[in-house]
Length: 234
Image 1 (cartoon, rainbow, N blue to C red):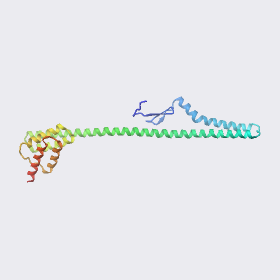
Image 2 (image 1 turned 45 degrees about the horizontal axis):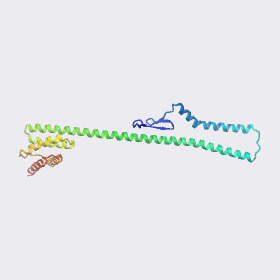
Image 3 (image 1 turned 120 degrees about the horizontal axis):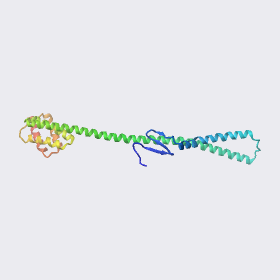
Image 4 (image 1 turned 135 degrees about the vertical axis):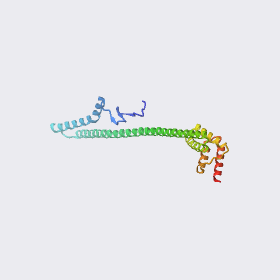
């Protein structure tokens, strides 16, 4: 039998228990007959037997009591008690079985729900990460486009500022193409030899972003940023 995680089932005493609805399917004739024979028939027979015994006791003539009669009566009494105990045990066993079935259903339901919740949580987390990465990549490319526009009109300060913002987003998204585009623009300006004034509060962050990019030209760009920082301090 193949276990289906969406509709787990368990077979108990030929009765099908559906874990999703936690109800017994008792619409079969065989199940009804079995339930009657195991639960109600012994009780009915016991009542009939007791009734017949009482009736016979009042209708029969007095019986002479001797050792054999006492022995037979005692054995009959013991057998009656034994049968009664067995009937009581059958009811107790039925209750215990019902409790075990209920616990089994609750355990299976909990396990299935845990697996489903775990799966949903994993898929949701992956979706959120992919969405965040997609948004970050879009921002990186947008700032790279702005940096190129500033570079074309020779506004090199805005080119550097936009390029460093794009580099920060590119590192976060781990987008190699965007990292290369940002570094290419920043490196081109650094090789011009001009010290472009930048906000000194951001230079340390720019240096960290360049170092995190692990680009071959990172060392030269960091030297250029340190040169800008020194000139700003001076």
